[in-house]
Length: 174
Image (tube, rainbow, N blue to C red):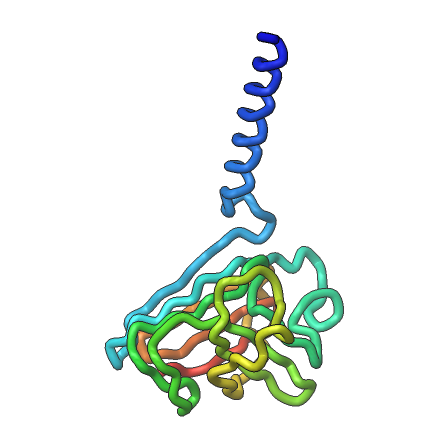
């Protein structure tokens, strides 16, 4: 009987350690990152995302953003865009709060989409598309220097840049 209890106790410890190791998001192939900036309007703007690496893959062919498909603008969980105050994104009103940030390449233009659902895994956009708050056209250009790892920046003027491969996707937050 003592052997059976010892085996169960050992299994419980192993499963607990395994579960805790999986919770350490920094060990993921696409680890979490964040960027935050208080912009000129006084709003604190932040983006929490997981940063995938290209690893020789090609954007639009092997990895997102793919033409015609909505992308969670990162890896793992939905990318979260937060603002502490009401702002304007590319001139359109966005109330203070947390949003799921998505990107769409429609073949002609790039769009950033802000959705009420921000706490889910993966790109389940079709499930939540009726909860969009804002869709704004972003400026896409070829990056001066290719970025193997997805990177976001926000400057004091409210310019947000997403760098991924040779894509530099930019939108303004005022």
